[in-house]
Image 1 (spheres, rainbow, N blue to C red):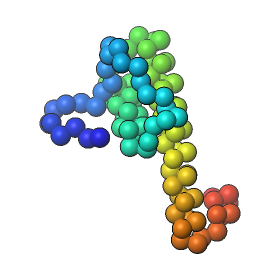
Image 2: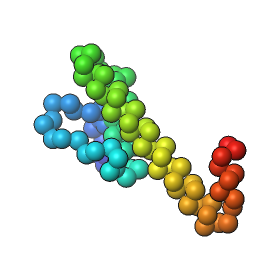
Image 3: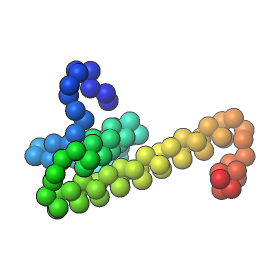
Length: 91
């Protein structure tokens, strides 16, 4: 989801009391958007070590989820186009 209002950042606001969605239940787009926000936050803001580590861990989980979803989509495309799924193992 891209902000339509200029000037708004994608940085993560850790002061929110909303519980984040479990990573393993996220679709690609929301996972990637959240990951972008975490990266921006870690690059531009000074955070306490424990908060920075929590952001880093969440970011790692989101990155892994995005890769899993992309791999799954690639496999499905290969199956639908008749390409050999075994070619994935050689890449």
